[in-house]
Image (cartoon, rainbow, N blue to C red; front, side, top):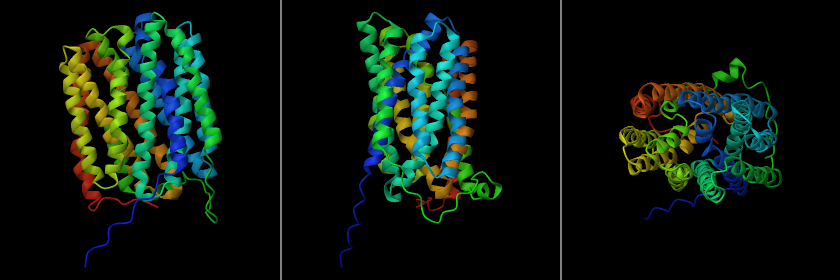
Length: 403
């Protein structure tokens, strides 16, 4: 007797698409600025690579560390949308500060405000996606949001290139245009996403009580530890921009580096998200780390823009393979009522690691040149790869989705 075919997977909910559109618009706004900001800081403001690393590390670490508090708060309140809306609004209203900044001080303030907004919205948004998506397609849902996010992340730099060529390298004019999609993102979230109903009878206690934290078992914490080591290998993309400029790419065209990276990232995130619903998470993560190591080798040894672009493309592939995957692994190893807290803790540890990574990258760049920065990234990626067999033993049959 022939076996029955497996039932079709459910469709991705409309609200996940809406959240993806919010991410797309926000990333258009952010990347129009961020693809130009390293050159603006170094070329116009005269900052060193170490200073750029410090600013970028502080900004991104702030975003990740703030996520722990927003995640805990979203679990305690049982409300995700309001916190996400606050975070996206903060990011949108920080954008005019870049255009108005007379010097480094306001740039730093704008960057930190923008990243605080990112930190507030990140964990509640990810927990919201996990809450509204059936467990069987959770990888696809995270991959879809990541793909739409990344479409915005390559459209933004592409717009920046066109406007820089049109307006003769006028950084501030481009920064003003970036305000518009940020405000549109806030409107889409406010009008297009509903708060899912609370589960009746669920008691909302303090999610960071010792008893609750004990429910985040060893497998989850090993995912957190590997994520931290992985983050050390994944310093700020500002160094990709500086590397492109260092090999002689014209200033107005340097944002094309981010276009290329994010185009590859967008094209790969959703397929790999779908694949993660069917294949071993550990094996897929290992493949992504191997791709990152090859990317670092190319970027460390590049003497021509073609090698830089090849390394950047591989960087985008590794992000497509791993970023949505890590979100799925956190969701699948944490209790449903503690997902916001779990994402927050994960991002707290990753935030500290990201600050260290960007400081190390900037210091190595200033002391020994760009090659040292990328060789170090490859070493950290190899260390993370070496830790995967331990996770495989903790998940002998691969952790299944948590409803």
